[in-house]
Image (cartoon, rainbow, N blue to C red; front, side, top):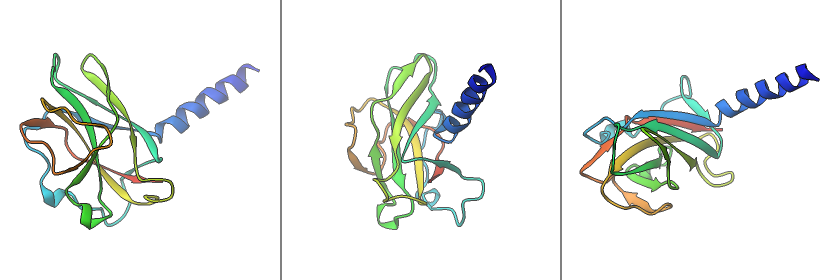
Length: 148
């Protein structure tokens, strides 16, 4: 029975790792350049995520601004500078995490998405579609993932 419990825990840990991604620290003064918003030629070295995945990152200690995670569908060139604001982040000291969505149902399977975290004084609404990233903000480096 004990070995069954250990197997279950290992399975849960292993399956959870594919449903999470770390975007690093909000420590960039400039947003990513438009030329960075390009889908990779292949999936080699790109993390994969499910339709919903937990995205985590870090802020500076004592950060008071609003923290948001933004997602951009890279596979659609018409949406090159369009970002979707993800649900409210959970903060714990200098760490944050957010449950993000990549596509809808079957739309988005196999596609690439850019993720960025931002700290801004602006208030944004979850689900809002923005053309460009807010100015006067701090950013994480761009992270690209592929939807399973």
